[in-house]
Amino acid sequence: MDLPQTNPLLPRRAFALGGAALLGAAVTGPLGRAAHAAPPPGEWVDVPVPPPAGRSQLFGIAAPDRWHVFAGGTENAFQPDARAVMLHGTPRGWTRAVLPEGLAVVNDVRARHAASAWAIAAGRNAQERTDLLHWNGHHWTTVAGPAGERLQAIDLDRTGGLWATGFSGDAATVSVRRHGQWTNTLTLPESSGLNAIAAGSASDVWAGGIGNSQTTTTPLWHFDGTDWTRMPWDSQWPHWILQIEYVAPDDVWFYALEQNPLFPPPTLHHWDGSAFTVHAIPGPSDPVGEVGLMSAVGFLGSIAADGQGGVWLSSPRDPAHLLNFDGASWTRATPPVTVTAYSMTRVPHTTTMWAGTQIGTVWRRS
Image (cartoon, rainbow, N blue to C red):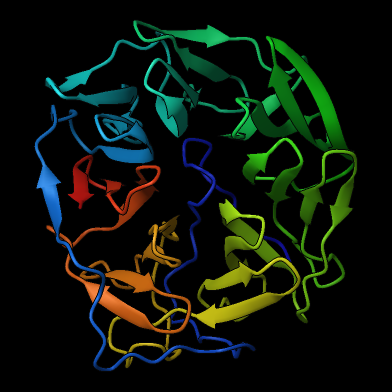
């Protein structure tokens, strides 16, 4: 199935679906119901940050500890003077960081330490310029990526290795950077790309992409430290793996879109170490836990582990709510403003959440 052409400025979860109402597809696995359940304790609140100019969006956010946050995106989006934005939150407040000239958007941000963060940023045309950026505690600078590759997504494993998916000609690649040196670990010829990656450790890495026809299986791969294995994805139609959220070897979440001609809404999948389960995502007017019609155009949403065995999810299908799934049932929470959170993250070892939104604002929940 051919997909609509995506804007090179949009991050990996952005996608133009068209304006028709789309029917939710049937899924297998448990569908949670929570008519009387409440979301986890806490409230989502707006956090004052330096306002970007014009139409602004925050596509990536990272919080390596309780006191530091990095949020990246764009201002004057889709205009000739679009410019990349990086906001820093510290105990002293929020500031705007200086980025290399000529960048239009920050698409991804990762950090495990306040003095060492990584980001992917692009110029007006991502095929002509995509930069890997590093924060050393004082400045953002451009760092060389794998030779001859255009990066798509990044993640940091728990030992500090930087994993990256990218393109080299018509091939999709996965590489890892250690001690300043890049090593290619996977090359997939004639691939549609691997736009999602999640690294738990040097021997537990997941990478996923888009299956673009009925005869192409879902491109989901797992690395065990020695070899990459293509993981079975039991469905009639291939899926686009939009995002992977790694918690533990037996606790990995996947946000995926079935490539069915009817364009069903995305679904949430869980790996428990031995098998996948799939969970339908409720729409704005559905009883929580049921499947309904989809009539959304544009950004497909984001997920983040909640630190309590479940995940938070933001979807353009229901911008009036942030959804929480505890592994069995869905509940809804109210965001500060009725917009979609384009990126979400959790502070390690806590239940504190951060989100960057489609209007360039930042939310916090603790």
